[in-house]
Image (cartoon, rainbow, N blue to C red; front, side, top):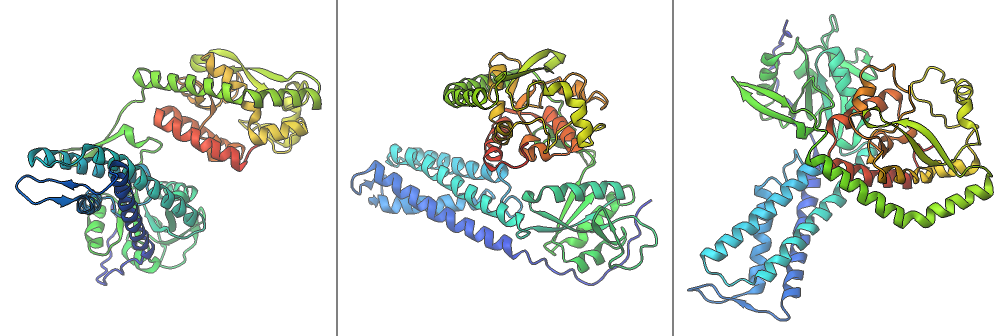
Length: 491
């Protein structure tokens, strides 16, 4: 059954979105300053004085002129390759990818023209200009992205979104958008297939989101809410015919239309869209747990663990001495955990609890009122010693697990190693987790650490197993350092 379309001849108001224009303008000016500075720096490093470049059959040109032309061409290349496309500004990897492509295309073009035109441009000058300029542009955009994220956390520089779809899918999409403000979307309202909802206006809310219309009220809801983005989630009532008509109605309004498939928790690299019989079919590649990717991950683990043990050995020695002095007893805590393919191993940690604390875990669960929780973690666990609380807050208690990584039992990044029997009641949870090695850090540790709910932790573990990559591991490592320094959610 499709949604009833209600004619709405009034033109849609154009969204304000002034921050996007301002942000793009600041990016352009920053790129211009950086490119100019780096090109002139390359010229200064390569030449001690101003030299001329000879173009066959033409008068000599000064290198200052060459640098000026290079700056102009570089800025044009960024613009032509979508470096200022509003859809990717502040997105991170996609934005950086376009900057890299634009720069490489430009210098490849210059190399071809120089060869065919017999231009005697110093290769050292170009070899210096490319990396200096590229690194400078990426650094500038990274700084602006950090500033954008801070703005978004304070509730500004956001895209206001109207979510349209079935009750379940729309609420799921809205909840996910609300949980990730860094991506820049703020859900303003929902349009759901509710009956008897009446005219557009405050008709109640679902999950904390106001419902301002049904599936036939979309245009009126757009007008009343002033959104700049419409996100359509999967719904039988709002099918392809309604989506196509909505796209036509939004043409020229400046309001973006997004489609959210029912497929969730699958990362972009595994998804490929291929048109078949006029339909954009989404192909999902199966996750890979062997081959070159796994070899690279193992090499990364051994490198990071080896360097970590070498650099952090004085810190580990200091922690061991502190435990011996402050809390007599074993320095290390060893416990059996479940690894890849169900392999049992003993995990090493600095002891942060009283001796024998693991034997009274059921009592601790009862005291904290978590007898039925899947994962036990309490911010007021009486078994944790004062020194142990500091070690947990700074994650210093985890350092001995570097030995588990060196011996091949664990990885630097992965799902946390579980105690035998933990999480067994969750369907497919253990068998999927066992496809990869457990890790010292992982997605849920950088998403709130101990403050992450059990449901979200399970989802994040599934997500990592299904979508892991070496680049993703490096990103998680960097975020781990930030999370440890910030000290949020650690206990």
